[in-house]
Length: 469
Ligand code: LLP
Image (tube, rainbow, N blue to C red):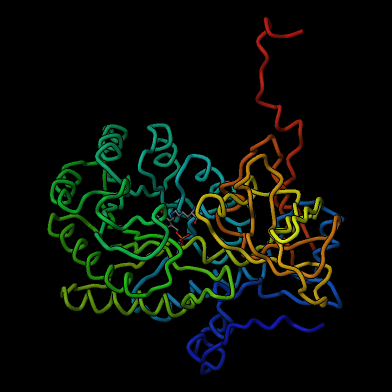
């Protein structure tokens, strides 16, 4: 079995020849820089992930299929955890931004690697709790949390990332009978830092729906200091997603530490800063994101330097909350080819049995993905085709230009780097059931999400009597 060699060169920076005192986890490749999960192998003609043949997995579990590699997910968790511990002399806590893929198994794996969880809805809170995540490591975000959601978070003992006045006023009302400052609050603000990514996933600029306008922070801290039930444990900022530059996070450190000292100047016990997530991953050969270690080193060094400049007596606890770079490249989606339409001189469409319902990212953000013919790995790439989804929408194209060997109905394709924001943004468009997901490791595969059925799709339908036959 020959390991698939990534074309990405592995530099000394990314850790292969580290001295022995380096954390073990940082000695391996940074999974966010790889196109395929770390365990990917070619066995004869067949692509294997986690010791399982992709084609055999489809035979056993059906198609389409999300295939999640446990080793890769564990590696990213360990690299974030260990890099933050290694490069930051104070206390650290990595949170998994579960919006990237919220389900019991992914949350449980993150938690077993000592990660906490960032959640944005009651559904994500309940998933994290049921996965066994300790509530003191759950941080509840969102720009429009309902009273019921806040109640659930407070009663469960989660920390709340206050995003706006509505949050603060609802929390103050919820805790009005309490005087023990038991509601832990982080204050999220917009740091005014721009980064180069898709407009929809930028969040750090002043014109954003998320977080307090920095000009309102004096009033915010004053308000919190007067609420006996609220304890302001720190401040939070997140600048965007799929970012390949390190400079914006370097800049963010200064702004966030400054904001922490402002909170402290109001007598608040603010001792935590959360620098958000945002590290990009490799979707195509052309992508070249920094490694997890480089990102962590940049963030930690910048925070320490900023604390120095601001003459903080004690280093704050440093939190971050990556999503995409933890789970993105740990997963491939397997599809089965169906129809093939050849328009001579124009284009060849290969249609698969999924599409924008299991991966809405190409149609939403024009995201580019790569694909492999999972059962023809040693065949020559002789065709350039368009991989089309099965949905009734011309824009339902998964990949505009894919280089593949000659494929026909029944062939299995594997689209890479589909772990982040694929399942979590999936839909039932055209009443197509969501695919199953399996977790693979050492040649074993376990279902972590059952395939939806047509019956599931009808479960919430009601036919008023007068419409019945
Ligand atoms: N923290 C906050 C407050 C966030 O809003 C996000 C992502 C993260 C952390 C995690 O960011 P990451 O490390 O995953 O970049 N659906 C879009 C991405 C939306 C990101 C939303 N917020 C996509 O598919 O590209």
